[in-house]
Amino acid sequence: MQSSVITSKRGRLVVIEAAVDIQRSPEAVFDYCSDHTHEPEWNSKMKDVAKLTDTPIGVGTRYRMQFTSAPAVISECVRFERPSVWEMVGRSRAMTFGWRGRMRPELERDIATIKARLEGAGPPPPGSAAGAPSR
View 1 (cartoon, rainbow, N blue to C red):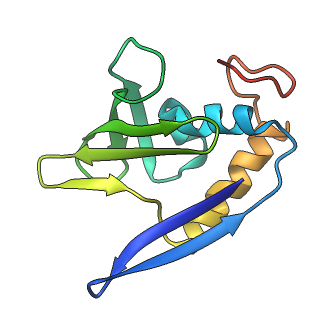
View 2 (tube, rainbow, N blue to C red):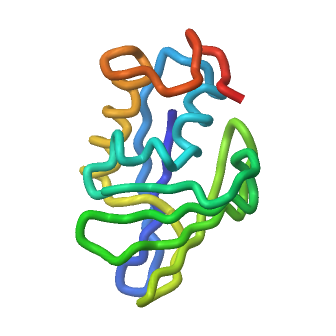
């Protein structure tokens, strides 16, 4: 799993990358990470996530995300290319923004948590079987 984080720093973009080997198929890792209902399992800043659409996860999927110290955000998937990339945009009462990731210490912790969950050190992701894609 490799993840890039793009953040604004004084008017310019900064790209931060982190990588980890997870002993699961790329499809299984992608399915787990792109289903944001799993995010409270590995993101300590995420309080709750509810999927708002009844369709399979992909472009147009919407979520209500509640962070520990911010207003609720409604996010929508605007790019979905399984098993390599997805992109979300969101809005709250205060702003509209795109999900490009978080800073390096949080990213590295989150990736390590995802690896542990998918490799069996934590509860297995719902609907996944021994490395098989869940969709």
